[in-house]
Image (cartoon, rainbow, N blue to C red; front, side, top):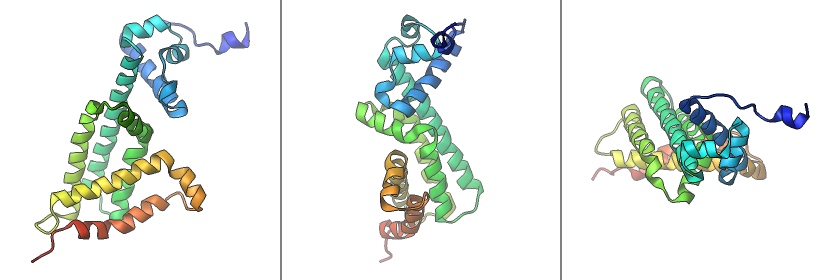
Length: 208
């Protein structure tokens, strides 16, 4: 038996649910290692040992596979944000802990690449579960740090936007930028945490 034959995945019977799950797992790996262009029916079929036609049966087309992958990853991102919400509701912590929790949610499971992919595709309908989770995150931060007429929810929402944009940037290009600037691995989180109190103060309502 040749090495090439040994390396090729063996075909086996799968339920439709198993086939879809395995295909999405391999598609995610391809996205994280090779980018969106690597997520093709042929590539995924080869990795799980099924035919191109078999994947068309499950997903309809390459765009159907990519859409299903976006949906799966968005659900994971929403779940990660919900985990952050629960941490913020139960744990005590300074701004750095809040920032760390959000950074971890947005960096898990390739969320940075996912966000860039969805934005470039122009189909933002996949982000509805994330919208709901982010609203819960704003509510959790509001409950943690307090909100009143001087610190309205809109200001907290702006702070979450500030943290999330920094977290996505970190996930996409943080490592090479830190290397260029000779910065530590937690530099982005630290600077956001240091700026957060001032950011909230600037966006709060001043007493008249």
